[in-house]
Image (tube, rainbow, N blue to C red; front, side, top):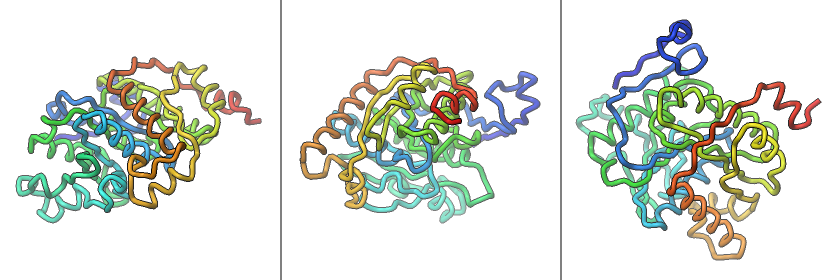
Length: 302
């Protein structure tokens, strides 16, 4: 896996216009996912990206699609509700064979979850010692080498928190659309604005484009709507703050396995509607992020 970090002064000279920052991570351009539709799910830490990703994977599978979910977080709990267990990470498995990837078999790092969803936990480097971009790149390379992407219709990357470095922006180099999960509050929207900036930077060199906003854990969307109206984003789905959603995580299951109460059925329908919309291909949104001060002014902070 060829990964290079390019100093910001080289970027500014035109060496690699991949956005502002001290370094940017560039993956091997020859390692491509293929024909599957690829979505990267981003959002503020703790906002419910893994719950959203897993239920989206389940919804796509209900549509008859062959789905692969890749968790990109050192917590490696992205696929917990799909598989009912904590999976070993790609990095953990590679370490057992002294990073000789040729010794691995698909069943060592790919696990089947609910309704046939295939699950991988990329994990992350040891704290303070490495780059998340390497982990994502190595995971995609392994999947490609074992021909596991050829029979896949949908790939979902569930990515750690806010985008603060080129490493955790690496899934954007593979994705067709990036979806942002947010709540109806200032901190979540501030994080969303940074993600919009990152996607705009990656869109200069890669095919990724903004696909829309998923409002999560929110009774209302008025603050999100204000931000969307100013930037050009659009609301793709609205998932309310229901205790049943929290309980699904405690029960180690997706919402599609919960008892069919009216509120659960409504959320299931919203996930199915969102999956169908994403499959058809949401129009790319040329959103323009706001300056930090403008967000404060827009959302009522004095």
